[in-house]
Each structure stands twice: as C-alpha cells, then as structure tokens.
Length: 319
Ligand code: CP
Image 1: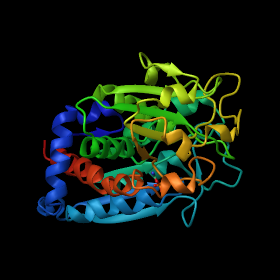
Image 2: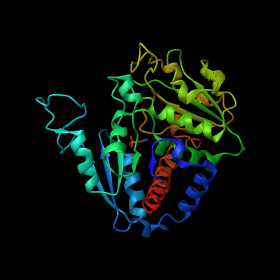
Image 3: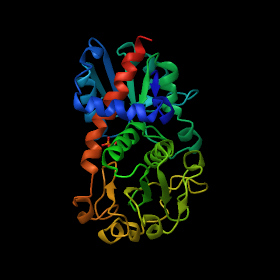
Image 4: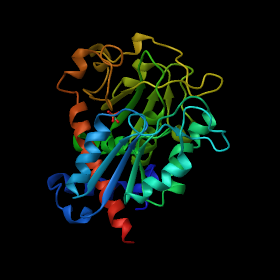
C-alpha cells in the first residue's frame, strides 16, 4: 500500500478485517517490519485517540516515532502559494513538507476542514500537498473530508459485535454547541456502503452530506423512524455541508440527543461514537454508560486499524 486516505486504499474489506482480527490476537507479530524505520505524525489539530493509538501501532511494528504539533513549537506555516510572507508565518508548507520527508519513512497527517473555503476543504488541499511534495507514503489521521483510520476501526468493531450477516446500521446527527467537520460521517458512510450493511442516515433538514459519500443511502428525516429495528446506532454531530450554509450550525435541537427512550426504539442496538463526545448533547449519561455502549472497544480498535495500515505501508516501502 502506498497511501491511506480513503476506503479505496485498503482493498478488499473482508481481507482487511480478517487481517485486523489476526493482528489483534498477536499485535507484535510484525515487529521486524519497522526496524530502523521512522514514522512522523504531524498534527495541525488536537487529538487523544489518534495520537496514542497510532503511536502504539507504530511501536507494535518496531518503528521509531516522531510527533510534531505544528501549532505548538514549530514555525507557523503559510499554506497559500503566492502570498507575500510579511505576516506571522515564517515558513512555507512547500519547504516544510519536503524537509519533513527527509527525516522519516512514512508520514501521518491530521488536518481538519477549516471552513474558510469549501473548495479547499473538499479538494483536501493540505493532505494532497503532503502526498505531492513529501516523497513519502502518507496516511490520513483525519483530514478535511475523511477519517479512514476511525472508519476502519468502526468496521472492525461492528464485525466483532454483529449477530446478523447484514446488520442495520444507523448514522444519526446529534446536537453540539460548535461547528464540527463532516469527515467522520462522510468516512463512516463511505465505509458502511462498501461493507454493504443495511445502512441509513438520519439528520434534520439542512444537514445533508456530500452526495459522493451518501449516494444510494436512505436519508430519513424522522430520527425515531430511522432508529426502529437498528442493530447499531452511530451518533455524530456535523456542521452543514450544503451552500450557502457550509460550516454553519443550523440546529442545537436536543430532541436529537440519543437517550434511553431513543435506544428503546431499536433492536437492542449497540451505541457507537468516535469520541470525544459531549455527554447530554450527543448522548445521555445512561446510554453511554449502558452495557450496549461499545465506545471503549471501538476506541481500542483504533490501535488495530492503525497497526494494519502501518504494516501495509511498511510492506509497500519494499514494493
Ligand atoms: N476519534 C478520534 O479521532 O479521536 P481523537 O480526535 O482524540 O484523535
């Protein structure tokens, strides 16, 4: 594998999940692969799970790891070409990227949507510059439009917990006080479609996602109707995608919060969320603390998805 930014990079999903479950039984089995190899993890945005799980995955594979928080201790980076750099950015991304590539074998990048330009966000302007100029295999640790390491972990978790061949999986919007990117729901939709589950999305009017991720997926505007018979409920907030409201919060309606009453509509569904989660906005205390909440095993599987992805990228260095 040469890069990992979308579901298409992982190939056959059944094989990927099988590899993940094998690695989960012996996560140090490929420790030789990373000897004398260095991973650079670059964060433009905060992280708890991605930072720790990806670093742990690299250590499972015997890699050295460098972590750089771009906004804490590094030179502030200009990202626009053609800018007269007389402002507060002393370094340009176009020098910084190839320099960073000199010090590592693989680069992971976290760069969220900025909500300044929909075109820049949805063309993955930052991530694609790393792919173009670093000279190294690049993987997404959540970019502007997708979070594939999370979605892969979500898929592994559903495969572990499902009791039906083709479970009903519901992605539901839930309220949040601030504008959040669409990367997690976009990516989740992309992976659920590829897995061919009975997948539906529910959200208030105005929160339609980009059709490239949701084409063919039933959109149900009545959350109660969508939840009926669900085997998995995946809650997430996102800001509006459609123009002219791109990046805006249109609703904070707490009738969309996932509560015990909402979960009672399902077929004893498991509750999932990528975390971090705002309790009693997205989900009630009772639901997230219930025995049907699998948010912790889901987070634990982030180490497994990252181990599979790094293993394949390390194998790709020799191809
Ligand atoms: N789910 C997830 O990516 O968590 P972090 O933002 O803490 O990395």
